[in-house]
Image 1 (cartoon, rainbow, N blue to C red):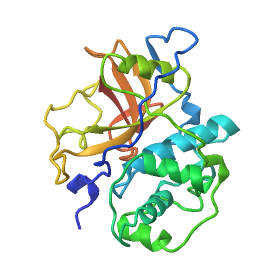
Image 2: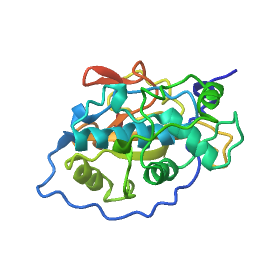
Image 3: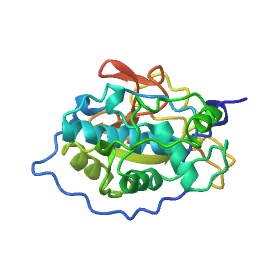
Image 4: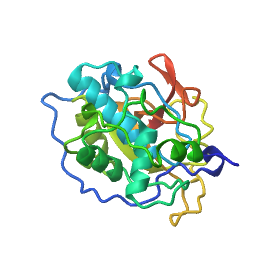
Length: 258
């Protein structure tokens, strides 16, 4: 059976229901380049289901938040929010048929974390390979949520237009990573780390979704206003540590032209 990297069924093809809000201005002028605190980030993981909308928000943001607030080590599975367990719970909440894996909205896992009081850890619900394994493990089993991953609120911010880079700068300098969604070019999945920054082919990867394009969610963890012709953002992806470019001693990242 083809995997998600062959079918490009990565999991983000629905419009969000999040209202954009203004970004709080940093108390000091943001520097020309900055990243969030790397010691709060979990290592890059690899999705094997159409669950990028969960990897970015749950494994990425919720794990980062817990590490920052409670002084936890995000490299330990005890302190990582499980994306695969959360994904199946979200699928169940959305009435998706068993043994079927569909994409979704970033709003859904955030709501789950809020109303469920957190989610399971990666120790209790490790990443599994493929849709069938995920449903077999968690389609009829529930785990006690770890309250470290409860998210009381969230905000949507505009990442296009004249204020986009300013919004990113003001959030990153306050140590706030950003889960976001975008359309992918047809060379993105096979990106090996060069060139830097990634500019892309300019041709959108085709999809059977209504948009006709492949949507994907990732996490912005830094920026450099002087990189490339337009500045660039540093992104943690969910394609595993062997994909993309290297940052902080690991693969799984990409500097993307802004």
